[in-house]
Length: 230
Length: 312
Image (tube, rainbow over the protein chains, first blue to last red):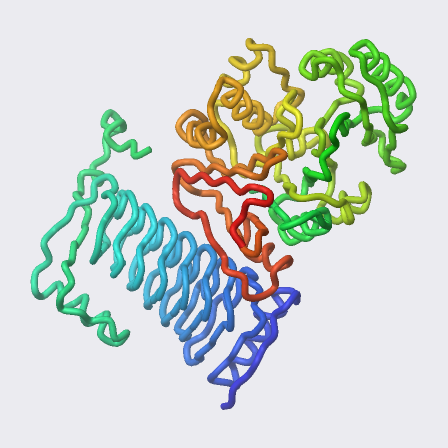
């Protein structure tokens, strides 16, 4: 069970992904080099591997992850970890639009800032962003937590359904039907338990816990104007 | 879907090749047609005209009528026109002309033969080349690689709002404003209303493409007295739809993005040069390693980058 290195360059991505899947059968650690921000790297990764992307990646990196530990050294394009079920994805820099879209489980940890609509329609799992989350974070999320340590852009938690958005730092504005609730000590402990393995616990944070106001749950078309956000 | 690109070089260079690379890397975003707006070394007087004729068999007559109108407006060819020698029914022609007395009037009259020969760009520097096919095909057919200049735009089109025709491709010239061109990724939903208003003021649109509106709209706002920055900002509240567009003129490239922020723009800004594309991986064709990426992912954004003004 030794390290295995894969070079991306201008190769066809399907060929690269087939090589990753093949290597995962016999190797625990995989290093992917020369990524050139290419799309769809490492889709449907299996449990039991620890894979690093040396550089920045394009769209949907680590999508449909079923348990792998993934590290992106640089930035990630759209939809990192989209639809992931389990595992852990660390993005060293900036996470582009819609990271963790529709994810069902596992953790995404972004060391930099994140683009708009992070965790859009997520159904479970946790997203931790050390920097600022972009506009409409958690858009229509159904479950799971988005935790931002460096503030939030406009329309935060827009049309949130049942998930939670936690923000330390400034929130530029709240989205429609988003409500700020004072967290209980038990709830803060739950979030700290998520942050603890990442070494990010800080008891001095002034948390805002944002949940659904539940008015959109009973949407009436005659009220449509009240929901126009732009 | 569509893919767009912009490039500003620190000094005059092979901007054509960079634009072809940026668009080749984004060919999957739109395979219907590809186009380029290249800003060459500006002329002191006279204009470069790029036009498309729709029936190669009528090329001689088309150019004769074009020249007739030109002379009516006190201008003439400076060089012999050059056209592509492909077997396609439509042809692309490059002409260099002396200054017509009034460019807007001349454009208006030349447009009376636009159903046969359509002027697609006019400028001291601007040349728009567009055609069916992907970046490699269009570049090969029209010799885009090796076009020398300071800056330019590129576009790969996936048609959504109007027909796939070589002349409905991007970039669009802001008819009749010399040297102004746009590329757009998205859909404009109220373009028909805006077009009708602008048509009542005398502007002409030669395709049913929604993006043709943006070029003229921004230029008209500036003609009414707005700065480029004001016009870009104003477009975000005035034009309805999904858009990230880039508009170029002799001085550089500006961009604006709608309020919902669906269409991305990734950029590199360093060493006095600028490179922008829909996808970061396209930028990596020009800057394989190292260069810092600046994303404009948020809603309601604008930016302007000038030729020769970028901080080193």
